[in-house]
Image 1 (tube, rainbow, N blue to C red):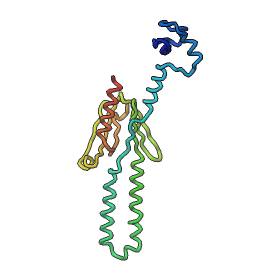
Image 2 (image 1 turned 180 degrees about the vertical axis):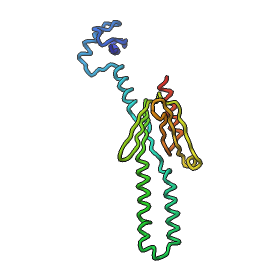
Image 3 (image 1 turned 135 degrees about the vertical axis):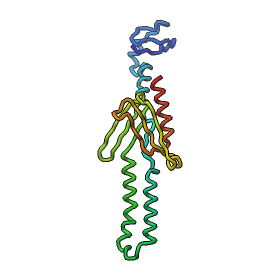
Image 4 (image 1 turned 90 degrees about the vertical axis):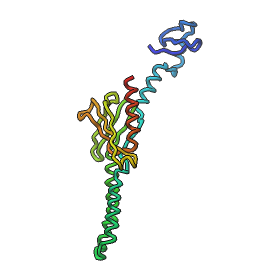
Amino acid sequence: MPLIACPECDHQVSTEAAACPGCGHPVAEQARRDPRASPPADSARAAEAVGKQSVLLEVRPSWWNFAGQFLLFLLIGSLLIAFAPSAWWNFGWLGLVIWPGVLLLLAFYRRRSFVMRIYADRVSVEEGFFSKEGSEFFIKDIRAVDVRQGLWSRLVGIGDVTISTAATVDATEEAPGVPHPNHIKDLLIAQRQKSTS
């Protein structure tokens, strides 16, 4: 039995009541005339459901994970340019032109093959580019959130986030080389505390 506010005295009245018990205003008759008037309890539940479906944070690996590959290319390319014999340049320049494109495609493929979405009540992880593998677990099942950062990772602000749960088979989900790992950890812990209270 949903409740609505009486338009005359603002008392909470059942939509099935013929009249307000406080002032006698005909509530049922007004509800039939105005079908747009939805009970506040239903609209609050609908707003809560929409809030749980909206993505709080979408996480992908950072481009900094691939900086080493590009630095290696620059080093090898500059060494080849400096020390390669002139006869090698008849066909060797083609490799120097194609190789950066291959590295960029590889980095794009590896970055797009992982995404973690954090909702108010659950975490969704999708892996793969051509073939997809997905898993979901509820935030209330999270037991621990760990962040690992090496020296390079700390300098550029990335890290590995490992989420230990009671719901997954392996009991852990890992987001490798993601930006702002401590922000992700704080968000997951805050959502976990909301779900248990």
